Length: 110
Image 1: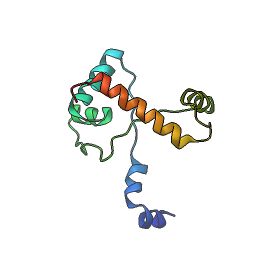
Image 2: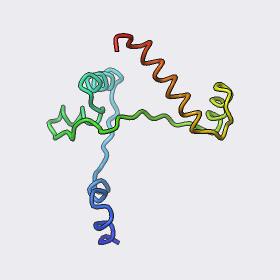
Image 3: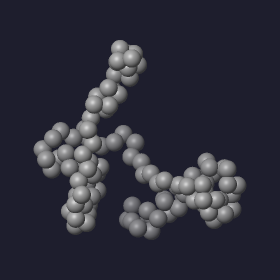
């Protein structure tokens, strides 16, 4: 199994061995790290790596935002957008339109 992993997914082996460390912090500390990460175009985890003087891989190739949606969320969004509940691609497109509209209102200079 180990040999097959090395042949098919060599980069995955390093990720499998990585250990994620979580920190329970104050809201003030978490906010400070997140805001500085945003200012520098980094993820919060890359910002932490920079703070503690570890190498940072750099900016993500494809920045993305994520949200977890339940079946009820899809039902609500389908109703909101007047779409079929199972047309998740159309729902995703409408959500993207709302996010871009939000960005325009939040940052009209861009």
